[in-house]
Length: 137
Image 1 (cartoon, rainbow, N blue to C red):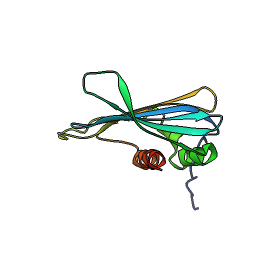
Image 2 (image 1 turned 60 degrees about the vertical axis):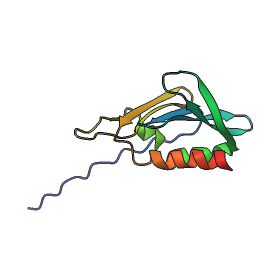
Image 3 (image 1 turned 45 degrees about the vertical axis):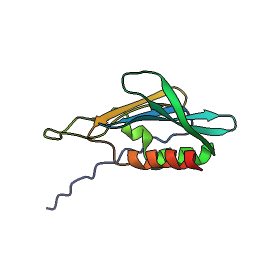
């Protein structure tokens, strides 16, 4: 008699269909900046802010606008909702590293939070690169 293991059904990824705001703070030994995307009637506004150490006030470093549907496609490609609850704890022995903190509101009132020190979701660098590309254009 042969026995077959049942394959676990993969849970379907929840997709972003709308968002109001996404904020990601990146920091390390020599840098601190924040990128933010806000959905508006005319598209998605993407901004980069700097902050001086020890000061909560942020200052605008650059701003760009892109198509909201294209931005939402990027969020789904990066699996933004799948990051919810991510907590990348600082690995033992790592003396330096980058940290991030993400807060987002998507699909109405769905709150997404993630953070990490030295460990990040793999696609967060892709999302950060796209934020910068939009600002540079």
